[in-house]
Image (tube, rainbow, N blue to C red; front, side):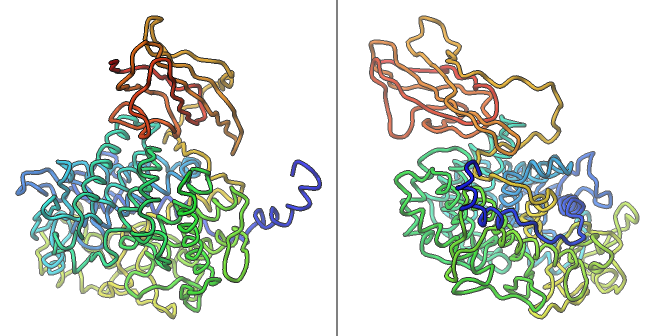
Length: 626
């Protein structure tokens, strides 16, 4: 590219990377808007003034009251009125990952603010559900009593008991997934709401410690969940998944080393999966660890991380039909895992294929499959084919997203959408009366569940649009969460992406200001008095441009100028919009890295950070000399 000889040698690879895909006539931006709107129909609790799904009302207003805790809020998982913690947490993790990777594209579509609101609706609930470090409420309501009734959420008469895990009744999978959700969401809010991001990260730290220290499957403690969301894979995948997200959020080397130390024993380097979802997280953690490796952040864990990457690539190859154990596809080309809500596996696998395609393209690598090297564009092409199928490019010509296209499911297995809105007819709907009056109706739903992605067709592309066909017509929050990321990516076209750069989620409502000159490479002393025993000097060491944005790497040297040993140190760092290496996060401040517990007289430590702004404000918050 720079040299003609190099360009000639690289040109076949670059052409494959940049080869435009044949676009179907789909409005991915419109589908993105609708898929995010769906979450407003799934809200539990007191609805906000800006609620756009107007046919819904307040519900679950006494959740948690009998247990002495406020559990109002959160999401109903699917077509029922139960709040299941494990799939809700996975939903928030995947929504956050979508925003982390493709927030800029969402902003261009005017949807970033809505996506962040959808995430916060979930994390606000998780904060309430985690009242103590080793206590987490993982379910409100009971699937058995709920399924006995067909009522809109506003009329619920079913049991709203709250179920929790604690040190005596552990649930490492539930606590681990919730830690992952809080950590991933903290990245989303780091720039626009740093105080909230710090609160989320604090909860994530505690939940991970709880999950790791008190090990056990959550459905052994919350047994009522077993019939509906049984943890078949156990909890090791969630512990690795949570560690990966905590490293991504904090840059704390402890979590990176946790992945390296436990990769073999917990299955991260051993399990080669062909599914990814609310229960089985291995393919997701393998993809994240492969990203860390390609970023050059593995350190002494490189050999182990290469084994994670090998399993990640096995998953990608199986998606493409180029592996040793390939995913099944319908005659129409849809990934098929199971009859009951198959779409959850379609959207989650397609998301991993999308991000991994961009990771490979950014690092100029091929996907390594048993059949040979595969250009990364094929992964994006696969993801696009799955999305296009969902939106109507299938043998039935049916969109499986409600409200998108001209033909879509009309009789969705969903209590709230199938019963007349309480705002239209406030007459109370009884538990069994709902079945007799509304469930059995053959007419279309009175309320359009816009954006809902239903379970989808069977292994032969057949689909029956019937309300009692819950395997095919019931939607779920975790169907949409990965999809919003793919739709944002596809809506932006096929320009070059560098997904290996540090994450900087844009503000949801950017303010246009006059461009500021780039910071000059100068030494910047910290705001401290001349008599301070600790000096801080910053300098910009390099910069580069990617995706139209300039990134700067800053080196900061902290020196103990006193004649005594610095036993403890807390640094306050504000206006930091990117990752930081060489310090340990401790609440609202930063302290010594894990490999250093003191600083002798005259000695220095160095940390670095990268972001697309002027130097961060670094100052001494607290220290101890001895």
